[in-house]
Image (cartoon, rainbow, N blue to C red; front, side, top):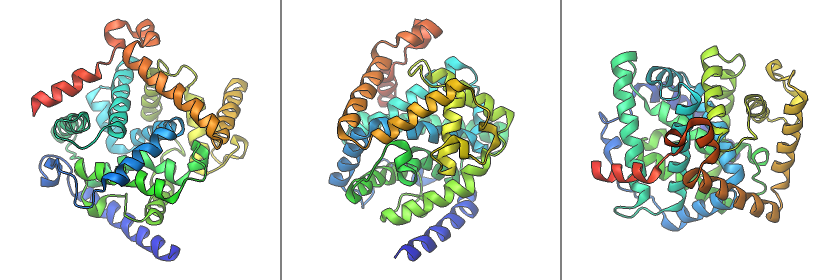
Amino acid sequence: MECTAKSLAEEFVDNLLNEGKKIPCDETLESFKRTEVPVYYDEKLYKRGQAFFNENIYGLMFSKFLGLICVIALPAGLNVLIMTKMSGSDMTAYRRYLATVFHVKTWYDYDFRPGSRLLASIEDVKRKHNAASKQSIRRLKYRFSQMDMALTQFGFMGFGLVRGAMVGIHNPKEEDLKGFIHVWRVLGYILGIEDRFNICRSSVQETREISDILLKKVFTPMFEKPETSLVKMVNYLINGMSAVDPAIDYYLCMTYLQMVLENRGNYRKLENQNYKNISWWVKTKLSILSMIMYCLKFKIIRLYFQYITVFKLWLASAFPVLAYIRFGIKNGHVNFLKIIYRSKKSN
C-alpha cells in the first residue's frame, strides 16, 4: 500500500512540475471561475478538518507562517512581490499578510453557504490573484500556473502533514488528517486548481508522500543559498508580523524553518551552514520554541496556546496596539470586514 502511494505520488509530482507549469490558473481558465463545491465535498469531513485546525491552532498557524516563507521563495511568487511592491516594506507586508491570516481563519470558521463570509473571502482572494496575474503577464510575461497554485497550497497545509511533531501536531487521528486534507482539497478546487494538480488527494498517505517529495525536491533547495531579494522580502514579512507576535525575528524563523526542512530537532545538527552562527538569544528562543512544540502533545498546553492564539488574532483585528505604535493608527488597522463587504458588492 505504501509502495503504491509513493509511486502514485512520484507520478503526480512529475506531472505537476512538468505539465502543471504550462496550464494557467486565472480567469482564462473556466475552473478558476467556479464557486460551487466539488461533487466529493463532505460537509461532515470538512467540519472535522476545521475543528482539527482550531484545536491545534498555535502549531498549524506557525506551520502556515513557515509555509508562507516557502511560498515567497518560489520564483513566481518572489518576482510578483517585487513587481507589485505590495510587500516592499515592514508596514505593507504587515497589512498584506495579516489580511492573509484573517482570510485563512475565515475558511476554518464558516460554512459554504450563499452569502457567507467564507465565499466572500474566497472571491476577494481570487480577485486579487487575478489582478496580480494580469499585472505579471503585462510586466513579467508570466502567467500564474496550476503548478504555482499547487505549490502555494503546500505552504498552507504541507508542514502540518509531513513535519507534524515539529509544529506541535502529535499523534493525530487518521480521520482528523482526512478532514484537514479535505479542507484544502475543497479550497484548492474552488480557488481554481484542477483535480489532477490538486496535491490534496482522497488518500492521507498519498497526500503525505506528495508533500514530502515537494518539500525535498522543490522547497529545500531554495534555502541552501537564499537570494538577496528573498532575504529582503522575508525580512519584511517577519518584521511586519512581529507587530502581531513580537517574539519572532528573522534568524529564529529561518533557523527553525531550516530545522523543519531538514527534519532535525537540533539546530546544531543542521547541514546548512547559514544557520550555525546564530546569537545566544536566538538559540535561547529556539530552545523555548522547540519545547513549546514538544509540550503541545499535552491537551492542557494545547488549550492554553489555543486561547493565546485566538486572543492575539482578536487583538490584531480589534485593537492592534503594537501596529498602531509602529505604523500609525490608519496603517496599523486592517479592516477585514470591509474587505469582505467589498467582495460581496463586487459580485
